[in-house]
Each structure stands twice: as C-alpha cells, then as structure tokens.
Image (cartoon, rainbow, N blue to C red):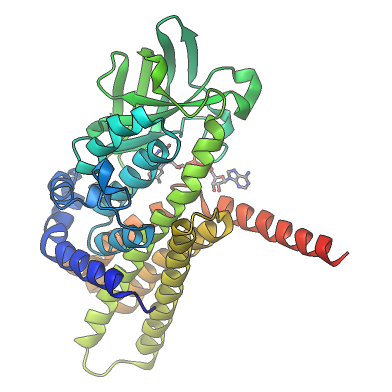
Length: 381
Ligand SMILES: Cc1cc2nc3c(=O)[nH]c(=O)nc-3n(C[C@H](O)[C@H](O)[C@H](O)COP(=O)(O)OP(=O)(O)OC[C@H]3O[C@@H](n4cnc5c(N)ncnc54)[C@H](O)[C@@H]3O)c2cc1C
C-alpha cells in the first residue's frame, strides 16, 4: 500500500526504534515472564504512549493510521510490547478522550500520553466475557460517591496502571442498561490486584485479576453518564479492534520475516516452500489493507463496526496461520528461540480471543452485512 510521506517517515522511525530498542528484551521477557517495563519507558520517552491525542493534551497530534502503523511495527518484534501500547491507548485512554468531561480529559490524558500513568480497561469478569452485559460488579450510589464491589479477569497492564476504566452495574435487574463506566485510580482503597494470569503467550505483558472491595470512588469519576456504560464500552471495543488488528498484523509480518530470512539462507528454495512463502506474504498484505482501511475510517470519524471486525478477524487468523506455516516450512529449527517463530506462534493465538473472539467478529460482520442488504432492498422498493 502506498503511504503518504508523513506516514512512511513515521513507519521508518518506528521500524528503527523497534529494531534497536524493542527487540532487545523481547526474548528474555517472554522466557522469564517479565513485564516489558523498559520498552514502556522507552515508548513514553519518545511520546509513543500518546500518538493519536492532540498536542494540547500532551499527545503527538498524529492520526489513527500512524498509531496503527506504530502498533504494527512494535508487535512485529515484540507482541507483548505491542499489546501493552494497544491496550493503553485504545482501551485505557480513548474512552476518556472520547467520553470524558473537559476536567477528566485535562486531569488524565496528559498523564497517560506522557506515560506517567499506564491506562487499563476492566470489563471482563469470571462470568462476563463475550457477553459483556452480564457484568456482576456492582456500583452503589452513596452521599460520598459510588461504592464498587466485584472482580475482573484478564485485565491487561493493571498491575502497572495508574487508571482503570471499570464497568459496574448500578442496577443488575436492568442488564446492559444498568452498566456504568468509572475512571478508577489504582491507588483507591479497596482496589487490589488479586493474581497474575499465567498465559500461553504474550508472557512479557501483564494480565491480572482485580478485586474491588468496598472501593469508594468520587462522584466525578463516572465516565459519560450513569447507565450509559454499555454503549461506551462497545464503542471503545469497536475502535480497539483496529489496534488489535494492527497488533496481529505485526505478528503475522514477524512470522513472514522469519520465514523469508530462513528461505533466503536456503540456497535453492523448494517449490513447496516457495508457494507457502507466497501465500503467507499475500495474506499479510491483505490483512494490512484491512487494518489500514479501518484506521482511515476512524480518522474520518465514521463509525465502521464491520470494517473494524474485518480487520481484527482476518489479521488475527492470518497471524496464527502465518506462524503455523513458518513453523511447518522451517521445521525443527523453528522450535528453538533462534527464529522467534515459536514465540509468535504462542502469542498469536491470544489475538484470536482478546477484544472479541473470532466467532463474535463473525456475528458482527453477518449482522452488518444483513443490515446493508436490508437497507438496499428498502431503497429498491
Ligand atoms: C491477551 C488478552 C488480553 C485481554 N485484555 C483484556 C483487558 O485489558 N480488559 C478486559 O476487560 N478484557 C481483556 N481480555 C478478555 C477478553 O476480552 C475476553 O477473553 C474475550 O472477550 C472473550 O471472553 P471469554 O474469554 O470470557 O470467552 P467466552 O465469552 O466465555 O467465550 C468462550 C467461547 O464461546 C464462544 N461464544 C461466546 N458467546 C458466543 C455466542 N453468542 N455465539 C457463538 N459463540 C460464542 C466464544 O467465541 C468462545 O469461543 C483479554 C483477553 C486476552 C486473550
């Protein structure tokens, strides 16, 4: 895809940063299950934790396509760092930027953009994953604010976060209509990290279970309006799928890089290896077009649930296929850390599940396609 000079220059900058800085700790963090703290600090120093936010709020003032390119390049060498910047920006910061009051934006966005705070997003619970309306965490209005009780699971970066956007229900009998969003500061009494998840992949990223016990948050910590949390979470997740698409695209490109490096050192390539390399390269480029297309919708401020689902679904499945093909073709050496493919293979599987599973993406796409055809049929009548 032809990029503007501005985007191509930014990609070159991120590629250099990823190769020279991010890649260094990727293997060790994965092997030892250590958080990619050094990479987070390095991203913060360069302003990469606030790429799409305006300069007045401490961001870089760039567009969403630039941000997607950054997530892609970083994930190409270290997916654990990629998921960390993606969750921080799209899930931990975006909802405050989009739905926050001027006071909430002024208070939190500059700190998040500069990396003084890492942002986190707490929706998933032991009994609420794909069905986000089943949130069991409760919020009770009191004279002093809201008392929150409950727990969350699989929350990215929350041990290191300054803020978590929390979904809680003000009235569980209302289902999704009872859900409300809160900006919770992690130092609030009653907030605790209960345990760390021991994951198959993305082992350098932090994923934890949270517990809220009589956690009192001030009245001005409501994000948006009371009872409007479900809409805020859904819109956040739709946009978040662009960055998860970019994160998966980066892993797919990383697998292609490994396969191509191996093929280049092979001398004469077998017909089978050549064909499979071509298939992976074609799929990676198709995934890139879908991810960049979804980012361009976001830059045009056009809601595009279908295009975001296309990008997330396709890129996540391509990443798993690309890593699997690279392992099949390279064979035994791919099982060792020398090629990084084994790590990508484990990391990529998580991309199919987080921020909406492949089944959920297919449900969104089918619904949108049917609604498009219904609109067309209506026009024809
Ligand atoms: C790496 C990673 C990071 C994450 N980070 C965060 C985070 O920061 N914050 C956060 O809140 N959450 C986070 N999550 C959680 C994630 O969003 C959930 O895992 C995801 O929404 C799926 O929920 P679940 O795992 O409970 O699966 P379930 O919803 O229990 O689904 C299990 C299976 O059933 C299928 N299924 C469910 N409902 C339907 C249906 N209606 N029709 C057909 N099939 C269905 C699913 O496709 C899946 O195959 C993260 C997950 C991962 C993997």
